[in-house]
Image (cartoon, rainbow, N blue to C red):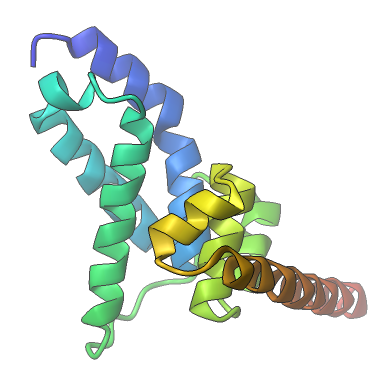
Amino acid sequence: MSDVRGFDEFYLASRDRLALQVAALTGDPFEALDHVQEAFIRAWTRWDRVSGYDDPEGWVRRVACNRAVSRWRRAHRLVLRPDAGSDVPFEAEQLVVIDALKRLPTREREAIVLHHLVGYSVEEIATRLGAPSGTVKSWLSRGRTRLAGELQAEEEVCDDTR
């Protein structure tokens, strides 16, 4: 843990990007912030090792996503949270996209987030999600179509309220 400056730089450079990616995956900005913060704590406690990885940010992302999946698996409990507001470091447009993403089926949402926000190739997504590349392509195609519809519906609602 001797490289405090290196960890600080890594944290500041990747924190917001990872929080946005995990929020897009979970649909809950508050939950995403919790997962990302915990992942950074785990990275800090292993920084001597994690800093030597080819992709330390990918390691933190995986830890945060694993935490989110674990939470989904324990979702039988109801947790009430306030609506996203000024306490989260996201723009209003980002929150609209996150809200639209959470209405997609899980695999489509995961594929879209990993491809468009994280930058993974179809093959990398297939490996990470344990699915054939063709299936990932179909998730991306259907997910984009559904996401466009969700965003169009949101825009129409906003236009009607003006």
